[in-house]
Image (cartoon, rainbow, N blue to C red; front, side, top):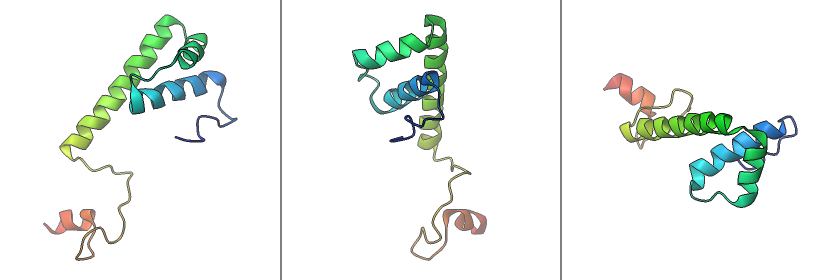
Length: 95
């Protein structure tokens, strides 16, 4: 997410939410005092719990989907993902 959190089109509150989600994803034990202060300055305790639960749910679902090997329909595989030149989508149709 490098660069995206600092997008000037985002409000301070939106940047705080994105910073929370990014840190939660990459290092859920790595919240420093500065980030906590910024998050809590933008969200009430109730809003923070709601944000936390939403982020945890999405991260968890993403991990379950990846574990199960469910393909992402928004991901466009490269034209030659396999040695025979077929993509995963074309292989699935021919199997």
